[in-house]
Amino acid sequence: MSIIVNGRAVAPPTDPRVSLLDLLREHEGLTGTKKGCNQGACGACTVLVDGERILSCLALAVQYDGCSVTTVEGLGTPGDLHPLQAAFVEHDGFQCGYCTPGQLCSAMAMVEELRRGVPSHVTGDLSATDIPFTADELRERMSGNLCRCGAYNGMVDAIMETFAQKEPAE
Image (cartoon, rainbow, N blue to C red; front, top):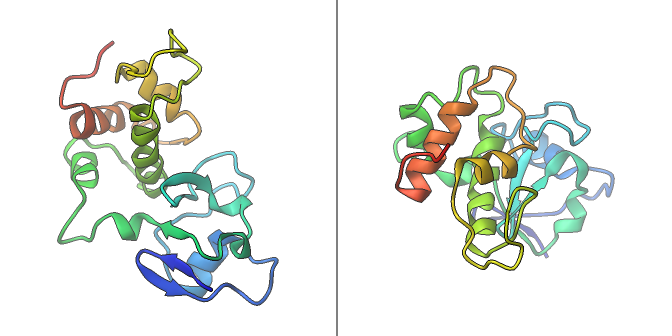
């Protein structure tokens, strides 16, 4: 078996103590995913596993044998940015950029959660299957990803422009 990382098969580590974050960064050289707090509190290490967002610093790589992992490198390339990456640039959704890879991966999964009707803490009607794509929903769903520079407004605008195709609701 192997872990499929950005479409490429990677052998699981022989040491079962290796975190998914360390496998990506240290073994595979995919340094886009950042090691922030290394305690699961900041979200800088967020990656997608089979489309779901996880904190890779808290995950053991061997747990994901047979799974598909997507890092920021798998979203787009410098010459061919994903529309969300381009929107982050256009809306100044990053400043130092350290949290940006985790923010991008988290936003990708967050939008799919919203589209599937998964409620959040601020969802008014828990039985609704069509949850409005509002700035409040977006902010709540992205609250596990911290930005010490405070580029949140640009990120919200970028996500709204990319996925909602409308101005952020206040």
